[in-house]
Image (tube, rainbow, N blue to C red; front, side, top):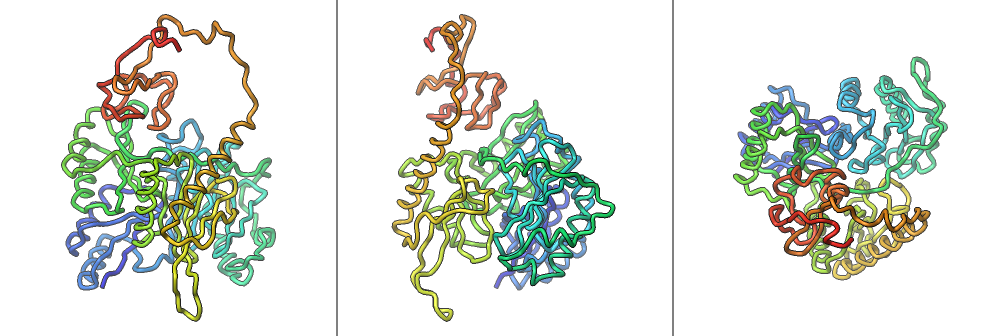
Amino acid sequence: MHQTVIINFPGGIISPGELHNILFAARNARVQYVRFGLRQQLLVDVSTYHSASFYAELDLLAIDYQVDNNKSPNIISSYPAEEIFTQNTWLTEGVYKDILDEIDYKPSLKVNICDSDQSFTPMLTGNINWIASSQSEHYWHLIIRFPKTNVTFEWSQLCYTNHIDRVTRALENLIIGHPDLFIDNISAKGEELFSLLNHDNIILKPAEHAAPLSSFNLPYYEGLNRYNNKYWLGIYRRDELFSIQFLKKMCELCLDTKLGQMCCTPWKSIIVKGIEEKDKSKWNALLEEFMINMRHAANELNFQVEDNCMEGLALKNFLVKHLSIEDTRTYGICFGIKTRKKSEVFSSILIRKRYFFNFLGLKLLPVYDILCAKDFNPNERTGEIFSKGNPAFILPEQLRRSIYKFQKYRLSTLNAKPFHRVAPIDELLPKENEFVYQCKACFTVYDESMGDAGQNINPGTAFGDLPEDYCCALCEAEKSDFIKISLADLQI
């Protein structure tokens, strides 16, 4: 009785004015909630009774949309992380927007455009994956993942920024034009694909190194956080549902405070960047009006579930509950839940559903396999099966054991690193004029020189510049519960 309308926001960049118009049309079609998808898309579930009027309004607004299919997958990018999670790289807002503007057609293959110095946006979930070079400004690595396979191939050439659009279009035409060679073929050859590519009028240069695939470190991507004398706001919803009433007021506040864009992320959340200090109280008031929670546990934020999958969402909540009860540390891990054969999720550890008995369309006894990515890096395409055929009731324990395996691996890599010089004792002694801030409740210390990585506080951030909702990393006491204390008094 419902149809899912999919609206692409290329690169995850949303115009508040355009979104407001879409939401107004959805509200007229009796829609109360919308969702965001893994590929930075808006998903609107509209009843068949009201669908015709909704489509008519979208047509009047000149909004491109798809119904119950994803024939034109969105171009995703790491732009939402730019400036707040990635800094000091040549890949700026202007470069992202130039590339997106130049791709003036709707690709039918998945295209990813990512900074190499981040793990917030998956790099290899596309078919055509552009990864910014960390050594050659305005040049890009290219990794192909052939459609409907896990076969990947990295091109030996770097491509210039201004030619990404034409290479993308040419490669898509070649892949679609030769389906027997390059689609659903585990024997697909990258060398063969690129031998067919016309290199004329394309600026290239040899890649001296393979594309760097950053080790996974998911930032805490919700809350109101300070950066560069401004604030960014991240909003996550446990049920993936965003109230239209809330989003409309959010768009209006963006326009009122002269913020020309919002972002949606591959984690089905929203980010607003560039909030001025003078407008901070307005955003807090909006969050309070709609009672938006800003303190979800990190082990809940690091799950990816397929779009339109209530079963996967229920399984996620079941597993998160057990991880919380057991107080399991999941830092550095990304979990994926996969219930469909050809779906794509980003994961260090993948929980994959299948049926113990599956014959002639008859499916009985659902079970779950747990798979680990190579080196637990979700950007890697290969992995191993950790545990097979688990019924749901033992899945939490098996997942806990896979996490333990990850922690052993991480510890072994840390121990393998060379030791640094041990400082002389006089260098270790605190100076008399050095201070830190200590929580009165649990004695946890905030050191300005170290910051607080768990809450995205950069080293060098003064205590006075911490957001007003900053809390103790251990006991969650408020910022006002910290006292200034001399390092010498602490005898550290």
